[in-house]
Image 1 (cartoon, rainbow, N blue to C red):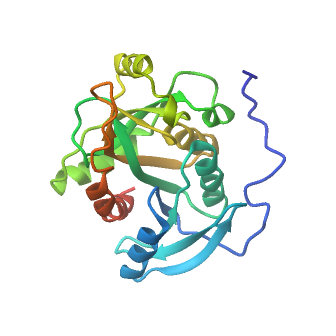
Image 2: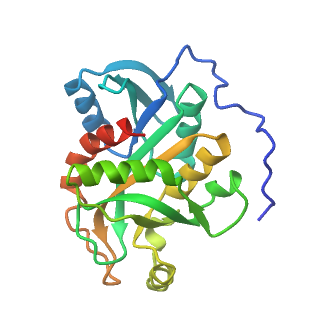
Length: 245
């Protein structure tokens, strides 16, 4: 592995110089485009613009709340793609991002449980472009505690997440799962470590809520319902939680 290099990149996240200024807070949702579009419409959201990639275009909506406007955008799956869009959100005005999406359970967590992330074990590659090498990324405590206090006030059960961020969806082996559980991980995802590392590098505030979908807790794969009920609740919970960041 090459040493971490904190020097500026030769390509800036705002290289396109779009006529776009985002609200300070953003909800970055690992959910379907259809679900996000419907939610934005139901909330009276207005289109702000879009970020284009080679494979698709990502609409950005502005939702009005009693605590000010919040941007809403779909997050692409996988650390490199997700951070590519996170960088652009920061470059065009976002100061605080709340990501929300599903995860796999490594312990006996029930399906559709919501988990604010405390820290992430780094087994992807993207975070190493943003932070010195190391096993863990620790999430900012202040926004997580505000979100947990809000969840407690609203009676939403939660368990703090210690997540294993992996690039290898089909390479989650028995021995790796045992090792990650010994390290304290209770869930597995594909983006958390990288998103938190990018935010810290850019000096921005970041938090993430995961909800449980499938499970590997028995050292075999059970898809359960793929977190379907969690998906239905995620945008409402995410929008409300973003208001307290």
